[in-house]
Image (cartoon, rainbow, N blue to C red; front, side, top):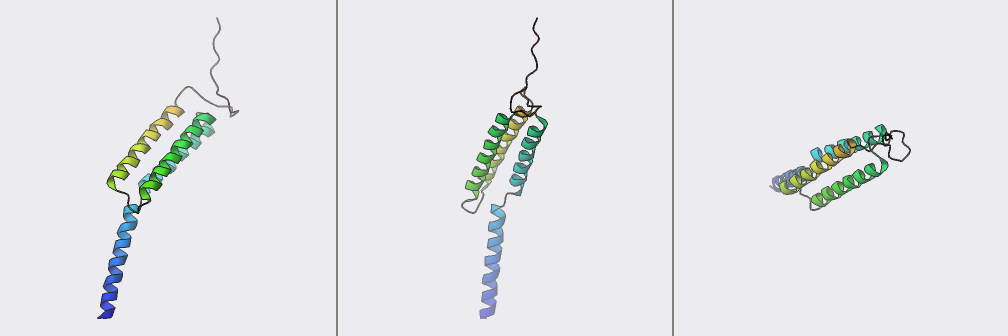
Length: 121
């Protein structure tokens, strides 16, 4: 009888720990952050992001990570926290796109913004 009770208790603990681990897991959010980091690095390598733009975007990524860490701190990422994280990622994604497609470039990687030469009449 004691063995059965121990087995039942072990099963309950294992299943509750599994549910806790799954509720704290954020694989989609983690993968998206990795993708956004890669987009920033690609922008730096191609010259479509200046060093200043890249630094600003990296700070945004750090804020996203801090927000995710706060959501995970209590062991459970609630649906509201998950939605807030996804919204913050959407905002960051739009910022990355905007910075990569603006008229500021650093194609020669000298740390200065390359601007098209002005035509003087």
